[in-house]
Image 1 (cartoon, helix red, strand yellow):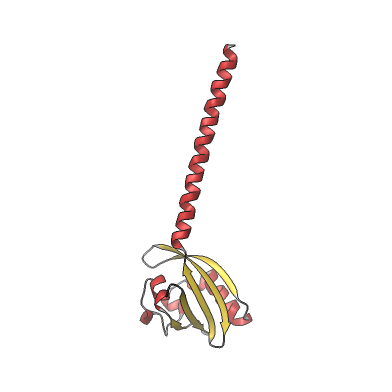
Image 2: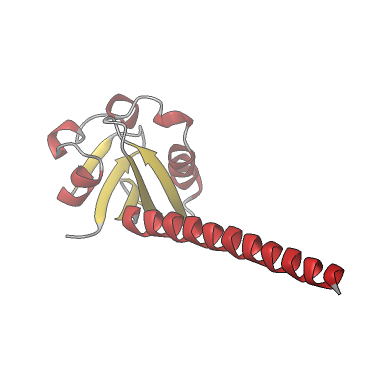
Length: 136
């Protein structure tokens, strides 16, 4: 399955994760199920993801988020999350959008480089034009 699916209980414990979640998290299902999120990912309680899970647990409103996540190995990934209130706690659906985000950054960098080159070329043309005017 391409989409990650996980269920987080009221005490922020992983009740269920599918293979895609384990792959996204670069870990195994055994290292998540039955553990609190804070045990699996120290510091997660300081993140937007954790805050939205809490809001969903308390209010039951569907929330969405695109999140940058730094893995334990230092690699960065980007995930699109959808949080939904269910009887057991919160259902979280996730999609790995890392390749899309990296392509966006690459495209932005290329656009900035092109803009700089165009600016340099325009300056050269203006300078030549000014020199030609001064000769006449």
